[in-house]
Length: 350
Ligand code: SAH
Image (cartoon, rainbow, N blue to C red; front, side, top):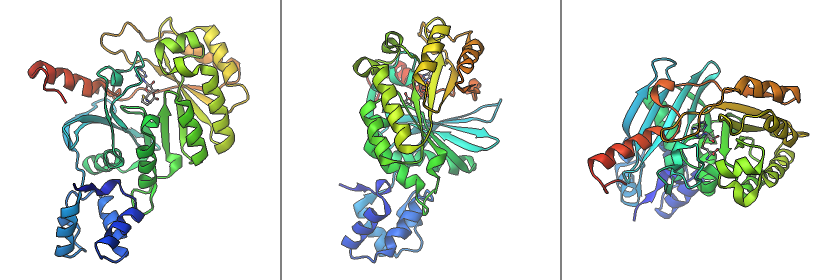
């Protein structure tokens, strides 16, 4: 069986090459090529033909295909639906800001977290992405769009902390000076709140930004919206967040999608403020993306809720919406594609 060479770090590639009887510097050469986005060993022109043939025998290079590409006429946001080597599809969104381009990437095919407002989880979970497949989204978005990428958010399809090892591998790959060299401080990882994994992440002491999808301060509401909360509870989650800040010194960003009549009351703002007391955090208020078949509707109290939080000394910003004309919210494109293929060939969906 051939091995996925792009999921390997430079030391692993070097060790593999050593086994093939090659000098150590070949490891770096191959790593550099892979992280430039070459699609074939034949493009590695500083390697001999015989080495290239040997590499082909033992390894493969992942190359996602563009299944669909949508460009927003409003703000230039680009959304990619990629087809992976095994036929599965995932989404990536490129957002253009004054301070640089940011890419929102997926970490799993589907999601098992079951959050009721989220399109990514509705068709269930298929599999975790390999480190190479996570990296490819950054690499090939940059190559295809011609836009240099300076920031990454792990906020696409999937739960990054449910794919902990591959996500860690990816973070080290994308951060490598011989690769894309994107600084940890330019990377945000978003989680629905896997407490044990937040503790693990704190121990790894990376300088990335942790975003926690809180969405409700009280267990009654949070249990309904995010099933993961039923086993942990908001109190334990906030405790893990406090410990994370103490260990890393990095302030956490709390995501809060505003839902009409569900999580947008003044009492809930007060409770949220109480949770955040003594912890330098930041609340990111998000207008709920109206997803099909969902009874949940966007709140009309965003400004009032923000004001209430601010009256408690909590910084809260309202997220600017990008790409609204191209269904840029995560999970929506893959889902509409799945629905279409279900109509076309029932039972034939990957
Ligand atoms: N699993 C991770 C990352 C993916 S979701 C997490 O839960 O954080 C990225 C963000 O989009 C999360 O904050 C998620 O709660 C939010 N989100 C999902 N569906 C949404 C919707 N319909 N409207 C607004 N935000 C949504």
